[in-house]
Image (cartoon, rainbow, N blue to C red; front, side, top):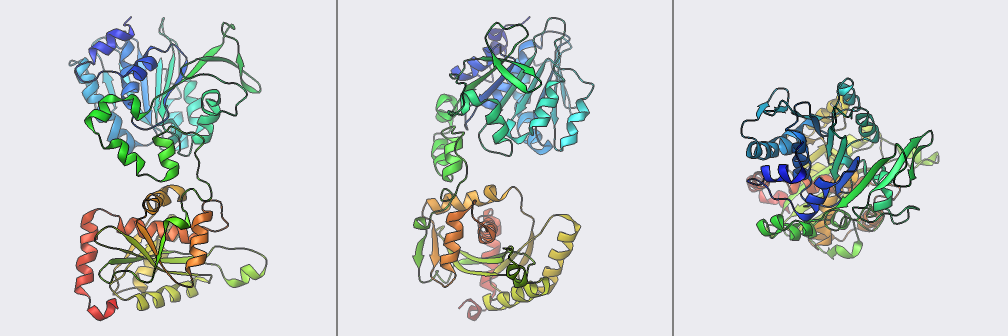
Length: 463
């Protein structure tokens, strides 16, 4: 059976492990979580781990990403350089996403886009199962795949995972590795120190080393500062991490699992300078986050959502100006009329973003707005990610003091909602700001398109 040093040497032409990566590869724990911050070389460590037993004919490994797109974009390409360098004679089946090695060993790649996709592995057995970006998976997907881990003719069973803090699965991952990640946990373990547990009716319980039948778990931390190959090859990488919003920066740069979005962390009013006006030659958009609720709902003691339209301008030097916010409650026909009126007041040089809700009804409604706004530069936009994720790019620019707010009767309520996000009662203005920022922060060709459109409009419309 190949030893750790053997398979590390095999991939040496393409890769040299860091000290942290080597500790991860040498770990004999049943479950091992690696990383906890950006830039620690997580994916490479998972791939190298799969090579450890490929000289054994009956070895089977499974390496997973949550989505097919992420699998294709990251692991598949990296595996080609890793596996080809170590075993030039290995063959890859593009259709089945499996590498077959000269011994007969196989390494499979898969994804679990949907919760039910875990059942595709119902009859499969693997000695090595790895999850890349574990916080993207659900807890039930992870625990179900553990049932597919089997020892085969002397091969040990290894469950490996790598991840950053954050993501939909942040809480369950932190809970599972609480002795290493949560300082408030009753049980404490040092980094790279394994703990042992047994499963009973109430779930896993920690036991003493040497307890019969106990399984082991460990967390091996790694940050960008632990990866000299990355910092030497890309010296500006750390500086780019410092440019993220405060929460994401703490998670990815510092590996802080306690950093979670809270009121006042993503936006502070002090970051946004108040001004009297935005430059006239700026590129402008207005993005609508719509809600179909009337004032009668509020009168009945409810606190329904608002429709919010944020008008945002971007200058040539990269500053963003919140010029105006329209915020109101209304029935569907009232919302439509107000959006049309606002478009007329803004002028045809202001691009309009209409948020498209999911489902066929959302498509139908967004199409109706496009028809009603004929003659304007209007586009349907389907948001991706949760509200916090969508707000983070604007948050990063706000903290960098690249945002300005034009004084107006609306600004006090706008700033209060920003500072209260994500714990406040409402987030409609935040959502509209996120959408407007995404339109203006799109790749340069889109910005140039808006600039060309602006120049085509009569100057009077830009006053």
